[in-house]
Image 1 (tube, rainbow, N blue to C red):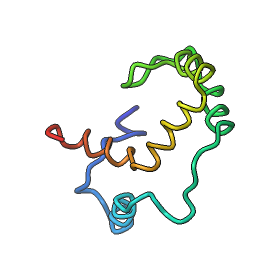
Image 2 (image 1 turned 180 degrees about the vertical axis):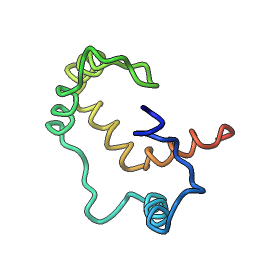
Image 3 (image 1 turned 30 degrees about the vertical axis):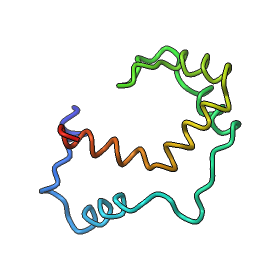
Image 4 (image 1 turned 90 degrees about the horizontal axis):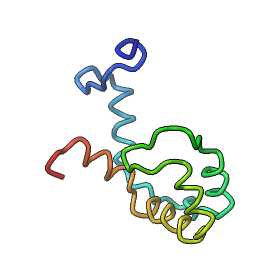
Length: 101
């Protein structure tokens, strides 16, 4: 089922639309309308996490995120703001694509 509903990403199969989308994702995320996250926004995200779900690649579960956020909400919010500022999502994609990154 995974091969049908979530096939592996193959750039050779890209049409013009896919190529445009890929190009847009390479542009810097820092635009005029970017703004820092609020503590309330991050709280809503963390509270909505499924605490029983297995951790992702970082090894952190929803329970860990919840405990950490309750102790140091300003610090956790600053981490998310840093990820936005330094465009971490593109860096993670690059590091997964290039084993020497």
